[in-house]
Length: 140
Length: 140
DNA sequence: CGGGATCCTAACCGATACTG
DNA sequence: CAGTATCGGTTAGGATCCCG
Image 1: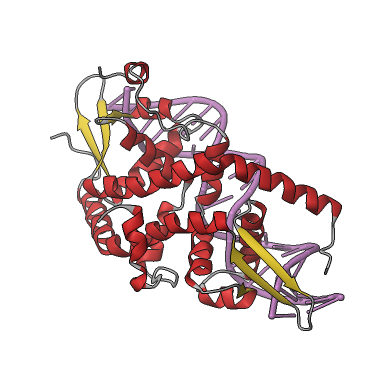
Image 2: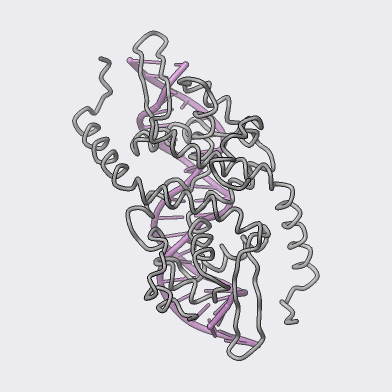
C-alpha cells in the first residue's frame, strides 16, 4: 500500500498536516529542491553512491549544499552514510527503507514535472504577457 | 558494471529531471512548503476558497507569502483566480485540472509526512544524541 | 476584503581556503 | 576524497502601514 494512487484514497486523515504540527515540520524539510534531487539520484542507482559521484550526477549543486543536504537527510533517517577508513577516504550514501519509501513519491513528483514542463512553461509565458498588457486587473 | 557511464551506456533510464532542464526548474518551484500547503488546502475543500478563508486554514502563513504563493501558482497554470467586483471584493481560488493532478502527488507527500512524523522525530533525536556523544566520526 | 508597498532582519548560499 | 571553516553578498520573508 505504498503507491500514490492508493495513498490518495486515504482522505480520511483529512489533511492533518495543514496545521502546525510535527508532520508539517517534516513536510517543510522535504520542500527543498536539493532534497528532492538527492533522493532522486540515490534511488536511481543500483547501490550506494560516493560523494563526488553524487555531486557529478547533480548538475549545479555546490559541495557545501550537498554536504548539508545529505547530513539533514541522514539526520531524518532517510539516508545512510557509510564510511570506509581507507586512503583515500571512501564515503558511500544510500537510502534507508524509509528513504526508499519517500523516494517513490518524490520520484512521482519528478516525473510529473517532466511530463508537464512544457505546459507550465507555456502557461508562464501567457501569464506574463497578460500581465504586460493588463497592468491593472480588469473586472469583466 | 559499477560506473555511471556504464549504466548510461547500458540504456538504463536516467531520471531526466536530475540535470539542469525546464523540468527541474518546475520541480524547484514545487519544492516550497507554502506551495505544498496551499495545494493541500485548495484540494481539501469542495469548491473555490476565498483568500482569507484560505489563510485561516493555514496556520502560520502571512498575507504576503500567501499572496505571492497564489500568484506563482496562478502563473504556472496550477491555480485559477476568480475576481468578483462586488463590495466588499470577493476573490476565489481553485485548482485547475493541472493543479488537481499535481495535488494528488503533493497530498501523497503530506500523508507520508503524517504517517512517518514520529519515526522521523525519533531518528532526529537519536542522530543529535549520537553527535553529542561522538563529536568526531568514529570509523568502525 | 484582498491585497500593495516598505522596512528590516535572519537565513541562505556561493566562493574560497584549508585539512586528515 | 570528502569534507570543515569562514567571509560576505543576496534574498526570503515577517512586521507593519496603507488603500480601493
